[in-house]
Length: 130
Length: 485
Image (spheres, rainbow over the protein chains, first blue to last red):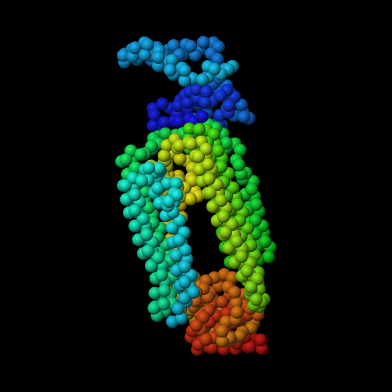
């Protein structure tokens, strides 16, 4: 999977990296069980500090997207939202997004169409998650 | 004046050969099958564009004009035959100035036209430049670093050669100090190769296309080819250095022992030099070809196009990409080149500048040797000789056990020191005598050779015949009186 980061962006690098991995898993570019580069390798290739990658990996692990094995490094291991934590988070973020959409004049049907298009682009729903 | 035509031919020949090698760059800049045109990704129909063709033609004209001027300038060596006196330093200085002119002029012309080509490309809307702030990484390729195709353990071979050569020198060749220079050069080259291996093996991996499999295949081929090349080059160069050192050692020993037939040495020396140079170039070209071939084959099989062109980073004729942490990158010409945006960039620049300064410095330091004179001061109990640079020697008469007055210096080989057509100073092996020091003016009529109490020889000669005879008489008288006492 190819990860692109924008060094000029206001979004911190570790957040961009976390988002890129989540999108990659969602799109099926990173399959469950697939290994990710080690923190050092990733940091070397991106030319960033190892702490930045470490932070991103830590977040991904806590959010249940990857597992970290000391011997084999990081592996993709997406877990289902068993306790509804994600749903709460999604509702919060959607509230803001939908509010902005209504202000900008985006119709509900148009918004739903957009959501459907993006959702269809994800392949992970067809994959088995833990 | 006896003009040294062989020396002039060898200097001029080296310059023409250098020029010929530099012409290879031309082949990669505007050659028929060049992958890039003036370092830029101009492909297919774009190459048929009138403006592109015009620019290429202008470059060709300027490039060839430069080469003709430099070719004629290299022949300038033969004009030195008109000088009333042979000046060795002039050869060195002329060569250095010519080489600086070649490199700077070539760089000026190339950077001027690559820049123009880049501007033309952008104005035509053909560019697909990467965003300066973008960083791309392929997770599949990045994992590859866990298993390098060529292990660093292979560098143990040249390492052992280096260690072995030092052990050999300390055990049986310490008196040949000049050989130590070769061994130190060997270790320096080995350290440089280790550094190159490290940078090539652990450097950032390149994202060629959107397809991870292609990225993996190309990166693995490039890593395998270049790290393998470094290991081979290090082994070959260190091995050659050691063989050359052994040969030179036997040559100097044979010279001291009075063996005149040196055919074996010359066959061995020329054979090993040419053989190893051919192998070194063959390994380099093989690695470069393997990478190029892999690219071509994958391009034909998978029909991939580069995600983005990196022309913006090549616009000055060299690679300058601050976002790339790689020190060594694949060149748009042949082989590998350095990323001038890394710390290695200024180092390369200063090594080049330092080399030029050193060459000019050596040339200037040689001027006193060409124009200077070996000075001798004869005292009541000593003879003091002052040569050029730091060469100075004092001979106490009480230290002399044996003295010879010769009409020419004995056959000898210099194992340390300096020398030109006229002067020779330093440590010598005198055929039929033994080891010692000498300061000699080759135009002198007499040569005095004395044996010191420590068993070492010391020889000297200056053009002042009367002073030479006077010094000999004083030494001999003193020696005889000491003997009588």
